View (cartoon, helix red, strand yellow):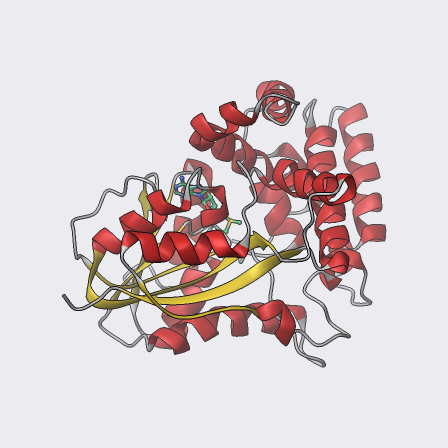
Length: 338
Ligand SMILES: C[S@@+](CC[C@H](N)C(=O)[O-])C[C@H]1O[C@@H](n2cnc3c(N)ncnc32)[C@H](O)[C@@H]1O
């Protein structure tokens, strides 16, 4: 299945006559005083968001919905693959293992890690639209025998105890209302002695709660369907609290080359493929979506969806420049043998 065009993306995964309502209801969850609704209704919020934005993500970013700690001279796509392969390397994944991908999107990382390691991977995802697209991507990649999707909430997984040999989570558990819930479930479904690794979205020590910092954090939350951003220390504490031993936690932002910070693809870089992601490209795409909506070539509400994505991108770049946020707080944890 090829990458969607902008006009395909603007149709979204929601029925055309409901886009306006769904995006309006979604945005209302980020009005003042709605924090509790985001926490109690986290699956509905996240599903509405990914129904609306998945095609835009595939149009502008590809099938791996995450950032990468990019090296100088490395392409955007190569940096994302290396970021995924790094988890496989650190966990020593190998053929024959049964691996869990927690919050797997449309399965870009799952397919790349399956190719790289030879392992069999099950991705858990709550979003039906992504599962439908990802299942077709797995078939197109010839990986349907080793890569699959399971529908479910990662806070209450539909798997037996000790049924996986390893697990990873890439920029997904930030959607959880409480990290202890999702990490506790991963702990339960892993065999004793198994690894759990991933990348977390977090606030860093430089975040000081000032109005500007709060504005940027709130922009990331609204632009990316997050109940509430947490500090890196919350991740360490939650992993330990559910029983994991921490082998390593580290902010990989420090590994990015200063010339290629993780937010560069959203800020501006000169490559033909990368244009839709840049500030200028996003302004152009946004205008095009507005014109399509006016001409009724895109559903009513499509422009608002594009607005949400631009809010996210601008807040991520702002927070990235200040160093108050990381999308790549790396952790490597182990379920003890006994
Ligand atoms: C930013 S995307 C990352 C996807 C994937 N890890 C990747 O890197 O391409 C976050 C994913 O987490 C999934 N997700 C969020 N909350 C979830 C929940 N409660 N249960 C299962 N999946 C969830 C979303 O549906 C989405 O697929």
